[in-house]
Image (cartoon, rainbow, N blue to C red):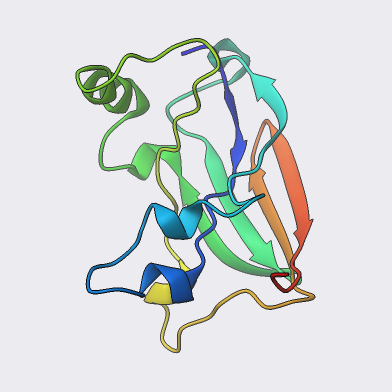
Length: 136
């Protein structure tokens, strides 16, 4: 693993639920839907690279918070499993999952709306800020 960064795996829920079967990949394929940044940090820069806090806020309200130590599979295992299916090349990005609090799983459900500010962070790396807008 070359490094870690902040990533936001967005989904367009109407597209995701269209059709006779869920359209998970297609719903994540709109322009701007997989932002990564602001930095790439090497694992040796963390006191414990297997225990990193991450999460996001919407309009200043914390909606997701977790720690990589709570993942079902640790990052090295994710990379090993993925490498058995496809070659991983320099520059490839692997999204490893999301902390609890996804909008579709909330009661009531909560979805991003035009004008919302989504801030995604990983402690020790930084944060990304995105202002949501309606699709053209």
